[in-house]
Length: 258
Image (tube, rainbow, N blue to C red):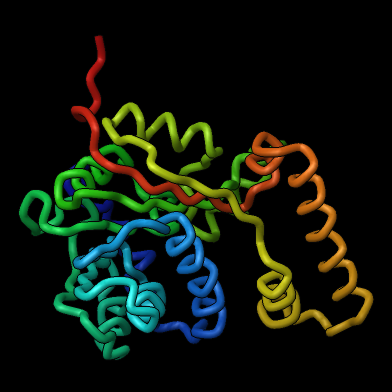
């Protein structure tokens, strides 16, 4: 069995061959919007060196590099198949890619300008341990999580576990987690699943027949949610959000009680 110093054996096994599966189109589409969120939330900041933790198949780093977001890139990943995929991408500016144990980052304090943790925290058994390592090795942190915690979520446990989501968040709970670990919120944004992503999931992943009616329904539902959010402001945006992106700097000590 694993302990708090490394990813549990069963969790590690679940991801070992994850990126050998042919899901390139789906991953790249997801990365397209994740990268846009990173760029949007980091406006006004420039970074020389970036580390992505839990870099998956490297799609995010590849798109960031293609847009000259930074000069130097590094990646760590618990999956050997992921590491192999990242190496095969020939990412411009990629200096290092290697496996890690899920918690210990083999880097110096403040070695990077920015560390990116995109759709990883929901998979992590001991969130605070990883967050402390992120805080140690980078001057700023960019974290994005899905907003899975909504009414009736306890009836969908099998659904979320099928995606490896063992933690549930709201924007408020993410902020609380980060603030209690000594991070300072610099900028944030909420986002909803784009119609392009919903159509891909419907027609490609779920293999449903293409239909003008379905297309119109997907577009209309997205438009209605956007309208509600524009009318009722940030509270509604956070309730309707499918993902939350947050840029943080380091402010205080790690968890300190009393």
